[in-house]
Amino acid sequence: MSLLPWIKVNGITYSHEELKRQSSFEYARSDFERSTLKFCHDWLNGQQEFTLQTSGSTGVPKPIVLFRKQMEASARQTIEALQLKSGETALVCLDTKYIAGQMMLVRSLIAGMNIIAVEPTSNPFDKIEDQDIDFVALVPYQLENSIEHEAEKLNQVRCAIIGGAAISLSLMEKIKKSRCFLFATYGMTETISHIALQRLNGKNVDDYFEAFPTIDLRLDERGCLCIKANYLKEEIITNDLVELMEERKFRWLGRIDNVINSGGIKVIPEKVELAFEKIFDSFQIKNRFFITGLADVKLGNKVTLVVEGLAFNKEIQKEILAEGIQVLTKYEVPKEFIFAKHFKETATGKINRSAIVASIQ
Image (cartoon, rainbow, N blue to C red; front, side):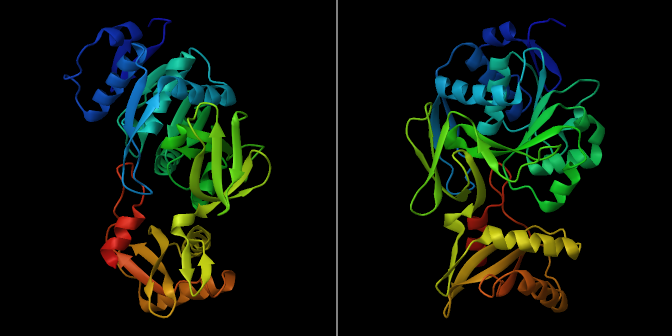
């Protein structure tokens, strides 16, 4: 194998020069293979603008144009923070039509890393044989499956970044023993991937995100995070409620567009969800769920627990709510259970709350 960096996509290895010369990828065996090869081809040939879709987790997916110099600036922050080096190998197992997968390619290409790209699956290490991996990005369900089925392969990875969804308390417990250095990420398409990291395991575990040195943060009048960076065209005003602890350190509380006004009291669903995650765990209930507000004549909106799967029996529901009363205010405790057979998801696998709520109202 050449000492020059290479790219292996679904088991076929390409040099950078081979990819630069390619003019068509019609032979690609899947959408993932095609999007990965084409992005690398375009990047290696100096393309300056890239159009991609937002994930749709907080609204309708929309196209967004990013410039090469912006993507480079974002990538270099992660390269420096995680000390990624030329000659190391990155595993790309996220959809390369979206920002998370594309930025994994950019970081690897800029750092001079080798790339192994495999179709996004719940267990990406399943197809990795006798190959050292130094860096990978995973969503929580991939991390959980990797710990369960390929723990030793994950342990051999130097560092991994985790994003795309919240990390459950049960998963937080599982990752404590992992020898791979794990970091949660905070970011979005508009910020060109993550702008902050949170150390999840090892000796220096954090309970907050710390933004990169080039990032400036502030809160607006709603208590939502606003982000400035020299590579962003303008300040990004998010809908994320946070506790800003220091200049670049913050704790994520929830999304303001999820806040429920129930009887004049504002309830943050994510706070309630955290409590019920512990309660569900104590009952050994694995169903996915979320908290939302449904229209109510008396309260305006009533706090409602939406659960995926078949309905629990009434006694179990009563016991669960009794536990909730012990740790939450009377305004935060759900007034009703709603069960949905299957949760709708976005294109990137996140729970599509708005679509689920629309279907049950």
